Length: 149
Image 1 (cartoon, rainbow, N blue to C red):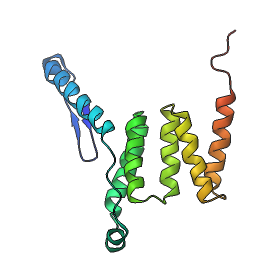
Image 2 (image 1 turned 90 degrees about the vertical axis):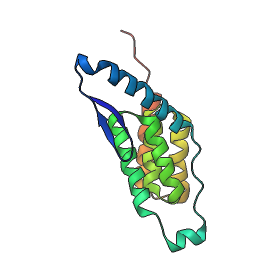
Image 3 (image 1 turned 60 degrees about the vertical axis):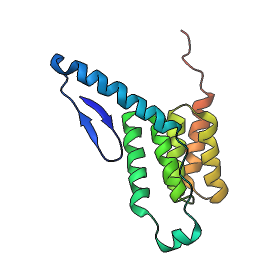
Image 4 (image 1 turned 180 degrees about the vertical axis):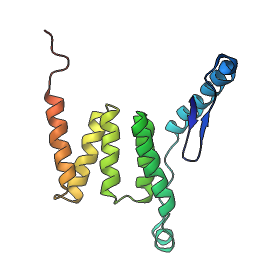
């Protein structure tokens, strides 16, 4: 059973009754770590000189992949944080902004999702995926929630 995952590791423990106490203790401890990581401020953006000398491509790709994985697992707020970390390194990446908007949408952070997609269109009015996503999101937002019969 998956007990914890982060950018570099995944911890699995047996799901049998003999390991229940250890598993529950690990789940509590790692839940505290995950909560603390969500509250951490984002790291500062590297300065222009540092970015010109060495762009941290590996770290950026790691955060994007981690965000994608967390989205797949349904851990949308954590995915958004990973995409935010990637944007610190590459603030001009429209694809990362698109993914961040999707994580916000899935986490039901409706103002933040639209804000990211509108920022994409401000930077590149011809970015078709952002425009289509905004149209789809507005259609879904206009639908009545759970119509009664």
